[in-house]
Length: 310
RNA sequence: CCAUCACAACCUUGGCCCG
Image 1 (cartoon, rainbow, N blue to C red):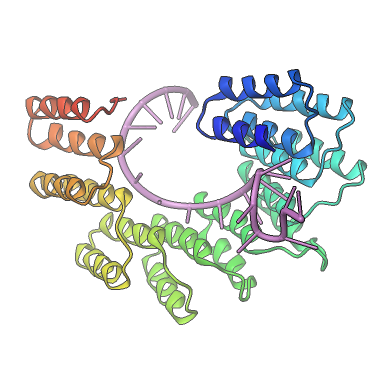
Image 2 (image 1 turned 45 degrees about the vertical axis):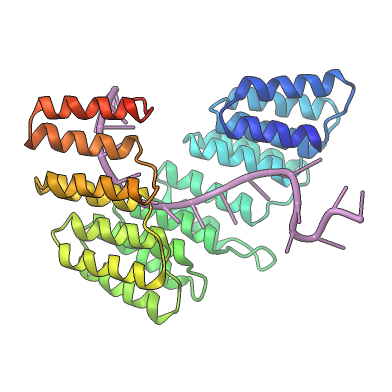
């Protein structure tokens, strides 16, 4: 328990070697890792791009007589899916079945995502259709498919999936569709969906607003973007650095560097982190519209803030 | 004892790389 928490902490902050060190210390002290401990290590390795190492831990786990559970399999299916290794994901899936472990809704959702990553949307859809009454798809399962369809420009198809969801769509579902509709230039569809959200009383969140602001600004609807910002304030949703970066980018594109810089000052006043994305956006605009010397001067401000330019 | 509290799945901004 104790070791597992430490391992999770190190891996989730990218401190792979320290995480591995804790694992070695744990096993060295004679503590026998259980399934949860193995799962934590496997997940930590996967999220740090060490899939091969994760697999060898998985094999060692089985050898040492520790029984993988559904979380173990889901973690690996997810990792293979995200790295577009469908064959690998299927291999884990088959192993899961042959070991008598029933897939749950998470395992299915990960597999749907994996299929979408390799553009097998039909098979993803089939998989969802074949899910049983005991294990029906949830919002995240559908969202995985909708995200795949939207990010490949298949928004009509995505909308038809949305229509099949009944009462399942959640805020993320709407966010994915709104983003997809804007990026496919289906503006009327996006506006309609935003209204539909209100009709269904699905709460917009910060991502919803950021998505709307981005979609509106990128297509010249600045007034409407301001209205969205107004709604945010009414609802008490605080803008974050993504909101500001989106607006700074829009101002830079309109060659309005003055207002872009004003926003950076507002961020600092509001104690929001002015991050690398902010500076990259702003310096790009300054170099384009003001001059390289001024851009260069801003580079020093980045360094002063303790941020490493990329 | 630890079944909301050691483990797994979804969304938005800039850039970079590859194609």
